[in-house]
Length: 415
Image (cartoon, rainbow, N blue to C red; front, side):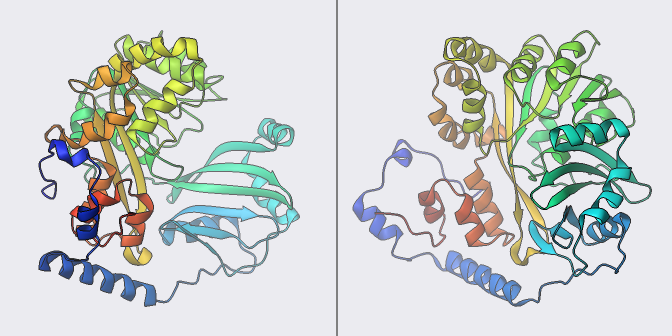
């Protein structure tokens, strides 16, 4: 990314009062000023556009609602007794123009989707994960739960065709990471940030290019991969394995080359994933963290204090990369774009993990751009220059306002 300058020892220092005054003076170059003006104009035009209205028939069916969501390029359908159905489109939740859902109708729509055993599980626990498919439309990951007014459910669309890395516009270095043969590669981010889709595209690339045995452990199974050059076995928690940890432990006796763990939820799963990576397997997994540094801290903090030095040593050798992903609304809300922070383990990184120096990770990323690494702030600046996201969106996610200011964007720096 050409907008980075070379990092000097002074770059990490606190700015002086004179430097802050200069940075806050709004004295940018003509080119940057013009870019900011264009960006502002695009934002204002998008804000003036009328919001779309989503309408359902009077006696709407579940298929009606799911078709509306898919046709509208939505990601989630929300059903909640006491409210009309709502859909999330490009990150924004909107109620449909439809009748309010009552308990009788919710039960008629939702309970036939699951087996008697799963109905009993839902009644006992108050929530249930499941998958659902409509031929020639899409597959959906469902969650059924009880709330104060009655039954509720959320359906997340899973694209019928697995998108390629090119279609997702993933950084090219991610393709290189797919050629690793052992270690732990983590895709992280908040719920709804596209982690599963990114992982599916990576597995799809490996499936088409390598001869390997791939085992996926998910809850529930989302993307189905048809074996190509690789043999792929899908396992679902609750159906084919008791838990993620149980599936991981068993997979080591099933001659895998690559293991995908849908989510590292607990200590045992995290430990087994690290152990599998340490013993010669390539392991892909997800975590709900927003940055590479927080990912390392989160993994270590799961373990008791006495065990943390051992886990640091194991993780320092097994962790190959962290891809921290955010899915952002484009200007005007007509789509979403992924922003990535990418950390790759190279010389010096294992020592950082062993010595608990995670505060240095961001500087490590910024000084290793030639290795394909990038910080989230750098990616946000790139998206601003492309006029794909708004200044407000960037401000919500940036970690270093000074960096944005030095790149020419009107960001106030606290004195």
